[in-house]
Length: 435
Image (cartoon, rainbow, N blue to C red; front, side):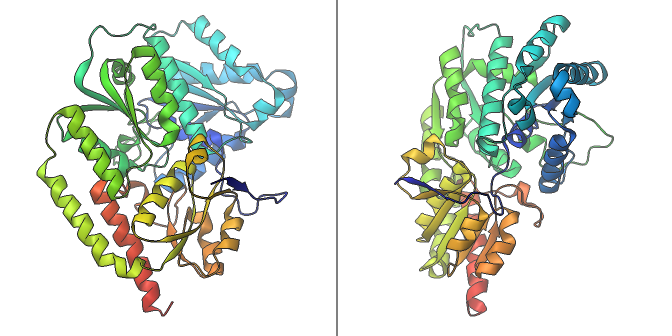
């Protein structure tokens, strides 16, 4: 199916979340890391505020705090001062310098300045890298995947381009997509570990943004994957990439260290969960634990119980590309008619799908939602769903009007069952109101 785009001259009620925020999110999954947004003060303030509202956790981020005169005369000075301050005061293990629309439009060569700073300080045990993420291209998903790709390149550079002499058969890499919650990542890690496999996750927000009661304050991330563990990814036997956007980082490992990868476009739904379990059986050479057989039975029973309420239902889904495709897959398994699929930007995965996809905003969702039963999007779509008379189900980022959204599980048999019941309850409540 061709990808269609709205022809409006402006975006109304935007669905898009900028690339730099995706880069900040990715770096939250590295231990003792610090994202540095090279741009105006408001760029970091927006990212920090939005992520804090979603995760309800402190977010590590710094800024070069550019003003008009800095951009005109010497943006490098601000960047160097910011790097010097971060390095001398906090000594992070990882610093990621992320561009913004301001520095991209001004044509600032910040990447050369980052390389020069790295040479001057002789940073050997820490990782300093840069990534170009203008707001006017892509979305949160592409910013996240580009940052992971640049991070992977930096890790490979730290290893000196040398492949390990021996790979560990029972060790695998996991590259989770941007839409996966902290609960999702923890669930996937648990499923992989149950087959006797050791998993290294990059990035790992399940230990940094899943909620904790650690005392004291730290300007750096307090969870995630340690740098030394990330370097051990070169010894893994294979890489598991979740979400089409994570295929490019997976290929980096294949080209550099000969590590094969397997791509799953999503892990929500019966078919996707079956494929994942079958793959883990194959690479581990172990049978599936009994609990997954019970979870599959539970899911099938839940699908049977809920099909009365899903039958004849229609939906509008407005999410990031990978998340939208994964959500559409399990909704189709439940027999839901997908009236419109809307996403903020085009990606290679969308070019391959047989579904009709629109590049647009939440205003486009509202126009197409008249008479539909379900509206699935981030919290910014709640008012539009109410005006259209559709039942609203919050998903994606940000979700700031529902507790526990960042720890909810939507993957595997158990996560799919939770969402089948969650959305089914919304349909049941609407039917009870005579909708």
